[in-house]
Length: 238
Length: 294
Ligand SMILES: Nc1ncnc2c1ncn2[C@@H]1O[C@H](COP(=O)(O)OP(=O)(O)O)[C@@H](O)[C@H]1O
Ligand SMILES: [Mg+2]
Image (cartoon, rainbow over all chains, first blue to last red; front, side):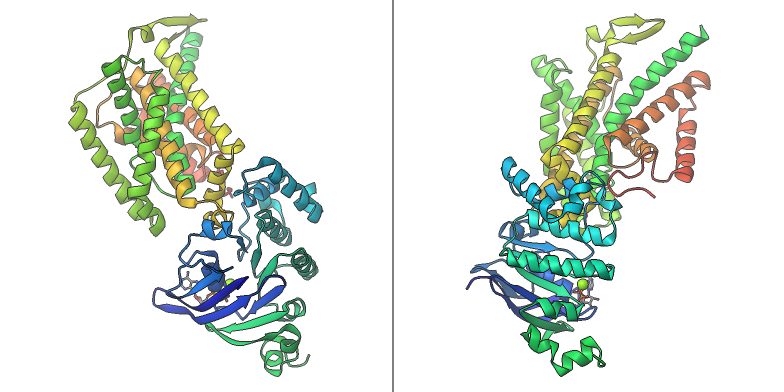
């Protein structure tokens, strides 16, 4: 099977259970959403996928290969890039240096230059400010930089952990447009979000996580019209 | 006459400062990248001096020529110490465990030095090092002059590596966001080992220069660890320029206070400056080059 599949993942922080048998699939191509409120276990799931945590039970399989147990940098080199929650740009490095870090695994210099050029085409605003420190950017711009840095690693699957968190509404729209464009270029996307409405509009399929379990999943449009989702996540009046 | 004395003191301070800077830069790097207060730092300075001594006595290699060899040997030893011993403390992320482990490392290595070289005073000096020359009224001897040049060259080289090379960028990235560095495909544990190796290597190089100028014993390591600590507090964490500024300040304070107040008092002035700095600019003159200062 191609793409990512998570099978029955369990994870606990010390004694505190965070994931309680999570399974989901991200087939090749397209956008899959993982939704849930604060503390549901979304970031923990992202970190298990990225190799930061080894699950106590279950496994992560990508294109037929078991990844769980691999360290973070190896998982990245298999083609899964996580854009972490809170952006985590290298604040004391320039925008260009941040992007170059994203292409760290690429040893061919001319290929790195090509990737940088391509990135600046997609993100013209980053090009203008290439020699500024990343820490001087606004939250939204840092999010753009974090995504651009992730794309420099030429992922086959991009995992985005709450890209719209704490960002001005106008930029949020821009970020969702960008995510669709990235998906169109052939990169699979696992979109982790609390912004349920916007995510369901772009995702072909979505999972809803609550207290470490998947409680619901279905096609984006179907969930958008689902009574439970409307009640619990979208506000009744809509 | 007093003008010449002032100039002489200034030049002496500069030279001493260059050595302090080089001896501290590794301590600063390890703190910046690994978040570890490396109490074994001073012992790596001493290991450099003793290794220089061994190479000189066994094969007659001039200590200055031995610098690349000493760097290489201590790079490997530092990397191994990180992988086998200190990595546990980095992972646990607790200041206390890093203090305990690196203190333990320094005790072990000190005993090793005593076992091999004995507890007595040693020196690296060669006859040519005492050749002096005069510039204006200022007298400089060969040991001090070559020490200053070697210090500045080493610091320049380290800056170049940190800011212009791929591995240097990876070190800075790891210092700023270790998780994100891993997500970029960087093997963070390897970077930690390399950082420790580079730091130990530069400490060793500074040890050779120290040995050219002063006699040394296996018990001097705490002095060098403390100097490194003070230098970093004065200059700021994590950049060679910070270490250079801190070292020059420390060197200047030491020589001027010994010259004009009395040779018994430099510590009073050094710790006075330290206190003042902690009050006025708690992040050092340059702040933290990785995390940004407030
Ligand atoms: N480092 C941690 N140590 C202990 N508990 C944690 C840690 N990180 C998260 N948790 C707990 O695990 C659960 C899931 O957290 P998380 O995966 O961050 O949720 P989400 O990303 O959906 O907001 C929460 O109950 C949270 O309090
Ligand atoms: Mg989260």
